[in-house]
Structures are given as C-alpha cells and as structure tokens.
Length: 186
Image (tube, rainbow, N blue to C red; front, side):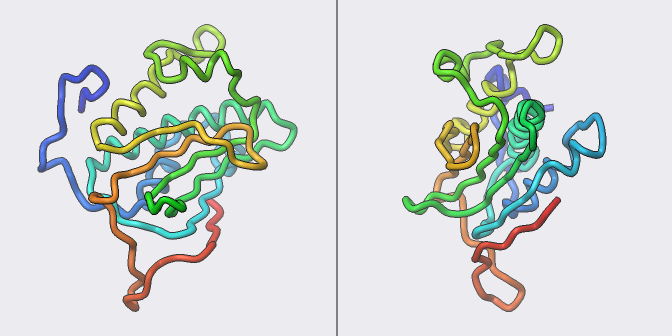
C-alpha cells in the first residue's frame, strides 16, 4: 500500500500509467463502500470533455473515493439527495474532476480547517478526519490542486485540477475529440 499521507512513499515511475479520467471516476464509484442500493445509485457522472491523465491510478481513484464518501454522507441530509461528478476542462484550460453534492454545506469555520489531518465534522465514530488531508497530499504530490469551489445548485463542490503537462484530451475511436455535455447515469 502506498503511504502518501505520511510522506513515507513517493510513487515511482512504474506506478504511473495513462488513465482516462472517466474510467478513474467509474472505478472510484465501483469501489465506494455503500450501505444500500440507494447510495450506489445516488452518484451521476457527467462528462463535459474526457481526458487522459498520467498518474498513479490507485492514488487518484482513492482520492475520488474519499470525496465521494463525504458527498454521499452529507447529501443524505437533504430532502432530495444528489451527488454529481463532472469531468472536463475549465476556462483556464485546466483539466478537472469535480465532486458535488447538495447536502448541508461546509461552515466558514470548517472551511479554514478542511485539509488539516484529523479534522472532522462527523459524529464520533463516523469519520477520522484523514480523507481530505489525504486528498490534498495526493494532489500536491501530483502537481495538481484541490479546491472547495462555488457551484450553483450545489452546497459543496470539490474540484481536483491536474497539471496540463500530465493530461491530454481523450479521443473517440474515430479520432475526434471526446467532448460535449454528455451525461452518464451511474
């Protein structure tokens, strides 16, 4: 197992591979521990423009799993829970994966401490406060970033942005760019 959080392990070149962003998201959804079928069906994948990422697949997948676990947990406090994962390219031409939910949101006080190890807003025994600090460490190690961003219609949106040098647009089998707003319910 890779010990990225503690800085004890830096991924080697043999652990890097080319991964389609939507495949990494699907893998994370498949690995997401759920309590019932409702939680599994809650997540919707929206592909604006898919891309390939050169990265340690396992670390990126587990980063997305951590964000999804939080999104599923907090969205269930809403009357109509919703979790979406968007894959695409933003206006600044950075490739992104966004994990959004319509749960209870994050207070200003909690926003200041989000990425601190062992900080949690969950009840005792429900979380350990390692997930977001793990996500931050992975993204820092990859040369990317994680941000809490405002997204209309959602109370919480975490955006993972990846360095341009490690990404490229995904091509369809016919050689055309894979883009456009296509939604794939999961």
